[in-house]
Length: 120
Image (cartoon, rainbow, N blue to C red; front, side, top):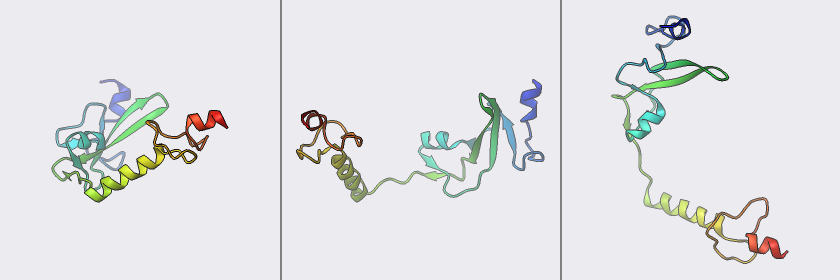
């Protein structure tokens, strides 16, 4: 193991305060937020259990790890929430000048659809 990788190996958490593992060195049972999402889980308010550290382009990088057995299933949106999102997205596609719903989001810089912006 190189010195750089060994610097991040602290499974007891004496140096960094929480258990720290090197890149791809975390034991089973831990997952990042992205990995939890891929499994259909969420941290459910649990504290950070450990971290993974590695040397990156801009310096040392950190990814926080959560316990998989304490994670809970992701919550699903209600029908009313889904309707609200659909309504908001429809409003972003509707031109304020000609009131036509376009297949693209209206650019905020123009404030109207591309056809109305070219005419005016």
